[in-house]
Image (tube, rainbow, N blue to C red; front, side):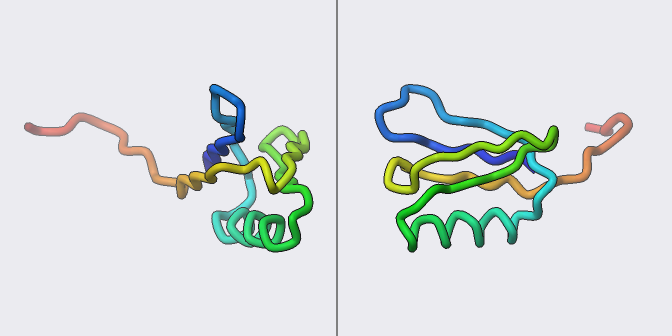
Length: 74
């Protein structure tokens, strides 16, 4: 699943692919924002991404979609 994170004072958003479920990511974001600590996520290669919760502008969680294979009749 793709996660996009907007960070204050950064012109670009952070984009990572994660093997965590949307519900897991949502829970981690909610906990970090409530505690005011660090938002810590793991990408699909096992790397940790840590962002101070007070610098998070937004989090966009794209749920995994099945890719369509074949040709569409139009």
